[in-house]
Image (cartoon, rainbow, N blue to C red; front, top):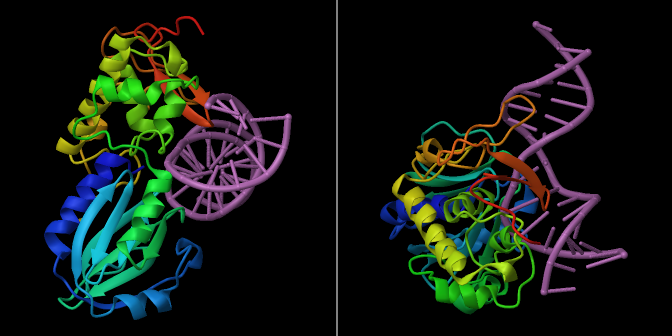
Length: 284
DNA sequence: CCACGATCCTGCTAGC
DNA sequence: TGCTAGCAGGATCGTG
């Protein structure tokens, strides 16, 4: 599940390698629904001959800008990967879009689950409007207690629901929400409005910390995440809460802080993992 | 404002 | 061994 750190690593990898490269062709679309506002034909017509001007990230979106202000906005959802390959390299299964460059390399969008989407924008203002309608502030580099307190102000939803809401805060998903709440010792179901100022400060710093650590470890390859070169990250070896609750087949793993078995609960149809001793529910 | 359920997809695995 | 049912989950949308 690519969240902010995984998208950041991919963006950095691609930035190094495709900025300045010129598009030779667009092909391979076998799943039109992945292009909600364009088609393979339009992408080909618009992109061929243009050079990549920049590769950026906003929230979990990867942005590839081209000369002339055209931009692609990629959301990988659960299983999508963006791989830069030699044009002669054997094709990956589940490739749904290929952007070929004139230097014999190509960017491949590979997505087994077909949840990923790519939008085309013709001008920077269109892209900005799309992102602004969906994304709250970026947690990196400098989310602090004051900012988070302001965001939380007047919100009575459960804190984890807010962390998953991209319009509340951009880039945090299920995995890093669980990790940040564990680190800050806050129960996922706590109504946001009941968080104390010290708890909010701890949470802000925990969010920054778990994201920065994951970036240093080149992302969490929990299921299918790979970077632009097709390499796995390392952060899955350092998770404290996520994936450590009991499952149908596995007993709960201990909390690394206090050895209490990690618990699991379903919130917004997603698993939440937390330590019942370190992360007290408190009053509701 | 907030919660919840449905939707979209398919690889994986438990269990028969 | 081979099949099937159930699970996972980000964003969006409709309902209460």
